[in-house]
Length: 294
Image (cartoon, rainbow, N blue to C red):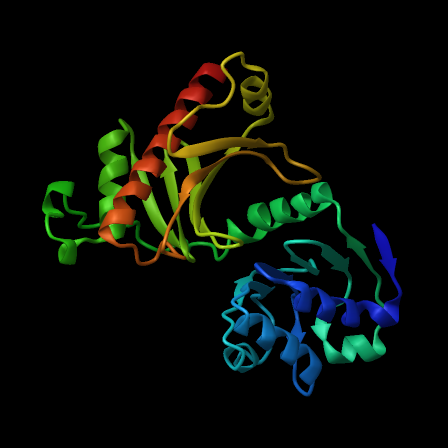
């Protein structure tokens, strides 16, 4: 960890953007790029290099969204976001500074750079647990996907394929319990048997499918100390993540294969069926683990 002098923070952020070759994550609640040509140039160059950019901003903040449109960036809006951090595949900056030119020129901020794999992974975990997985939340009034859901036998033609309906049917047919499936940003949220599961496409480096579920401390310790350990699956790699600070313990699975899609909003028949099967397999595995631990 290396301290950054206050007057050098914005410059270091721009260098981090320039150094990104695979992916870039920006977490800045407030953004104002007006008349900040140097910062816009770095972001524009990153897009032109094919860098995948995840840009998180505060949902309930009044700011000009056209500044993102002009750069070809779609920001992800998070309710009550306050964290500020920036990272690429090699290193990260954690700071108090928003991506605002006025802050660079007038505010007294603090920041540090980290290059260790362990610390960068903690920031990746923070993003996935607290931002990506929960962005944006489903509206409490949103109807679940199963409304008027057909049976899977009705999905006979590729042009008739409806990913969300197929997903619901696959989970419903595979589980002997009530199921609700909701759209959630670019992913889906599944409620089954008292547990909640969040699935999405992880776009940081490659388009891999990811799914997670919360665990109680008792369940986490039970699974971690079990002789059988976490499940083995030909299509998925399972992983336990211990909560830190106020985060909850979780169990994750990541697809071994990559996909063409970058979102679960519109999924083709071939990849949709594979992902639906993996979601069902994960839910069944977690359900079995929880039964053994409770």
